[in-house]
Length: 472
Image (cartoon, rainbow, N blue to C red; front, side):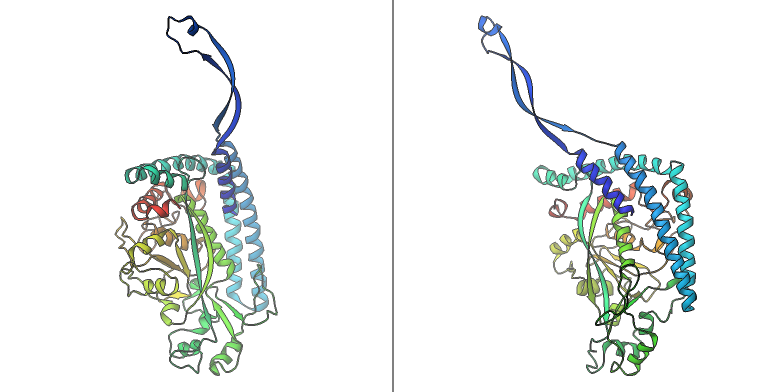
């Protein structure tokens, strides 16, 4: 819902801030051009001429009204959805004797109500208005920062083309980018490369490379707080409908056991996804919304990519500096990214088309991992291919920011302190910062990017993106 409000605000700015050209009659004085001493030059007359007038109009009050109304509507709708979803999970958990689902429902309900009430209070106490004023000031400062960087590097038509493309002087400012969100899949019928007569998933499970029961959602080996919402679908006609617009025909635990015990001879044919459709949508919407705080306008395309090797199902990719690292090779093989060592020009152009891949899990307790192509100011070395991977996890109010966190690294940002910040890392930094309480309780209500981070991202972008990408 927040994304819709942002789009409305940008639409108003786009439409109203652009020049308006009109033709109108104007009265002008005409005189003959003779020497001063010639009496014929002493006489002038008035004529009416048709001229084109260009006017610029900017409406700020309208944007403030749109933002406030949208914020209130979003808060109420989100709270209703949280209550309905939480109650449904509690009831379903009771009937199915699934205590995990009961706990999940109570958490969803509780977090939704508390967050909704806190946000309504924040709007009533004008916290949202104060934040809006600050954002408007920071937008101008970010534009000035980007203008200075561009004018130092480009000139002439190239400079003007970039300014027009990112709406630097008028309209909704931002770098427009098409991005691709991949979601990996497992297919029960894929044959094993080592035992062609047996399914690949069976062989990987028997050798201990993967735990298929975990990937199908019947075992939770990482503890309660590291549970993924894997999704299984039987192939063929869907005979039952699921909630949220998703049609499900999942396999049962007994059907999976039959598939494994008979080495694929019996049991249903199925496909496994690392996360549900709605979960992916939530994460991508958050990325679009928060990307605007960096001056990035991201539009997502969704694609499925099958994986067959254990290394592509359970990732271990901390080292992204070489072509042999697991993350870089995965991005090369499955996301179609170009290796910088082979073709640096194409690899650089691909920066304008980010990719983020939803995977099943890491060998560590990571939530996401980024592979920035160029070195950043905080010491992150440049990788041999660009992109990011992420997993599903609960609760969505926190974990939905993982993709945009990793894309922050993609654009050169570093880890920081404070749970009110999108780039926080409790592995390397502290959950506490002095801005935590005022931002979460009064001004923002959720994690965000700062102006300094937006400036740092654009410094990285202008330094590493080519002119064709910036002016597209």
